[in-house]
Length: 610
Image 1 (cartoon, rainbow, N blue to C red):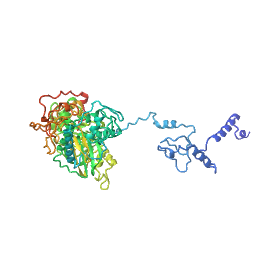
Image 2 (cartoon, rainbow, N blue to C red):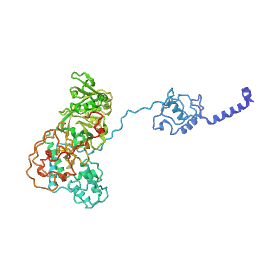
Image 3 (tube, helix red, strand yellow):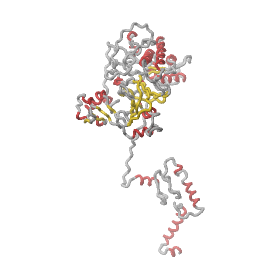
Image 4 (cartoon, rainbow, N blue to C red):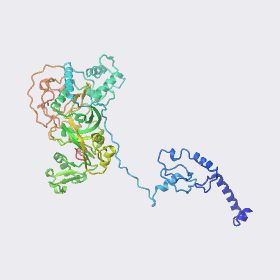
C-alpha cells in the first residue's frame, strides 16, 4: 500500500520485482567507485574486501607494465585482471561481468573495424659465430720467433728418432671405451708433451688420456671434446716431419719483422681466421674472422689502425671490377643498381652504366663506389689501417659465414664478427661524440651508425696491427700450435687440408696466379739452427740437394697437398726437399688433377667480395 501511495502508477507485480531486485543488488554488488558520502567504519571494510579480491592482481604484483593508476583520491576499481595498456575513465564503473577479452578486442580494432596491420620487426637475427679459443695467450709476442725456432729444433729431434706411428684413419673411440690402438695414442701424446710419461699402459680412453687429448685438440684448433674421431685422428696422423716444416717455415716468415709491439695491439693469424685484441700481454678478446680465399689471399701486413669509419662507402678495386663487376653486368645489366653502386668519371660526375660497353674492360677507367647502407660490402663499420696492399678489417652484410669452421672466402680483406665490440676496444681512450670527458660506449657507437651518415673517427693513439701467416708457432708456456697451410706457403702447394677440410672442392688445386703475392711468399734464407728435414718418418742420410730455382713471386704451385694422408707414401725423396720455409719445386712429371667446375649456385655471389 505504501508503494501504491508513493507510486500510484506502479503495478503490483512490478513493485514486487523492484523490491526483490533492489535487495539482491544491495546484497551482491559492491559499493560504487566514487561514493559521494562513504559511511564511517564501512569504507575500510569494503576496501579491505576489495584488496583481498585483487590480491596478486594489482599492478604492484605484476611483472608486466601496469596501466596508468587512477588520480589521487580515487577508490580502487572493482574489476577483473588488469590488462596492460587498458585504461578506464575515472568515475566510470565497469560492469561486473565485463570480460577482459572483450575490452581487448574492442581496443585492438581501429574505428574502421579493420584489424591493425602486423608489425614487422627490423631487428637483425642474433649473430651465430663459430667456436673460438678462449685462451688468453697471444698468438704473436716479441718472443714468438725464438720460441717457434726452438720448437722446430725439438720436432727435428722427433723426426730423427722416427716420429710417431699413424692411427687407423676410421678410428672412433669415446671416453671410457677400450681399443687396441689406444697404446699408440698414449705414446704419441707423450712425444708431443700433451701427456706426462709413466702413466698406465692400458687400452682404455681413461680420464687422464681424455684430458691429454683435449690439450692436443686445443693446440690444433679442434673442438675440445676428448672424443677420438675423424678430425682428431687426421691431425694425429700428420707426420712429424710435416709439423717440423710448419714450425721452421713460420719462423722464417717472422725473420726481419719490425712490428712495434706495445701495450695494445691487434693480431690476425690468417690460417686461424681469427682476430686477437692484445692488451698488456694478454688477449682481451678473440674475434671470429673471414679471411682471403686461396686465389685471393690475405697478405701479410704490419701497420697501424688510425681511423674508424661509420657507414663507409666502398670504392671497388680495379681487380674486382675485372673479376666480379664486369662478369655480373654482362649477365645482369641492372646489377650495379641493385647493389647501389655508382659509376663516376674522372671529374666525379655520375655516369649511367648503360653508357659503358660491358663487353670490353672499359669500366676500369671509371670509379665504382657503393653507397653506405646495409647492402654495402663493408657493412656498417670499416677499420682503417693504411698499407700498400689496400686491405683492412670491416663489417659485412654476409654474416652467415661467421658460423662456419672454415672461413677462407674474402678477396683479401678481413671481415670481423662482432666488429662493433672490437671498435669499442679500439676507441678506448678516444674522446666520445660529446667531446673530452665522454667515451665511445656501445650506445654511442650504435647512435653514430644509426644516423646513416659517413663519419670518420680518428684514434687518439694509433694501434699497431699485423696480419701474419703462422701454420706452426710456439707460445711462451712451451705449447706448440698448428694450423692448416691453406695457402700452401710452407710447401708451395695449396693444402688439401685433411684435418678440417678447409678448402672447398671447387678451389682445390687452383693456382693463385692472378692475385698479388702475399708478403712472405718469397723464399727467405734458412736459419742456421734449423736443418733440412726429410718428409719420411724414418731417418735417412741426406744427399746433396739439387739446385732449386726461386719461384716467381705471386705464383703458387698447382696440385694438391696430401697432408696427413698420402704425404707419407708419395712424398718426394730427401734430395728434393728444399730448405725449411722454401716453396717446393713444381713436379714436372705429373700434371695437376683436372679441376671440376663449381656449380652455378656456388659461382654466384650476392655482393662484390672484399
